[in-house]
Image (tube, rainbow, N blue to C red):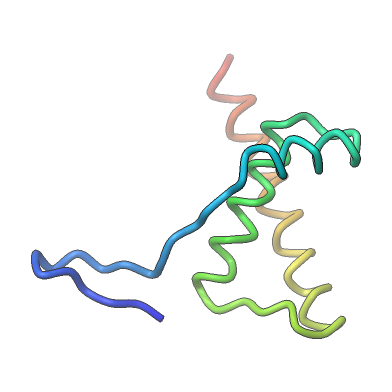
Length: 82
């Protein structure tokens, strides 16, 4: 669902991340906390633009897109820190 605010801005929705849950998930997966948060943000954005993960086919498609975007983000951040 999306909407326009009275001042004309276009909103797709919100992304909410529970810090303690993300921290626990990052520890369980052996990931850096910031990397896990980046994964969650990318996952949320994909949902906001219409990706679904209700079945295994959709989950796989979404996972491929998430991995590609996370890789691009890492490359961007590496270049930006040079």
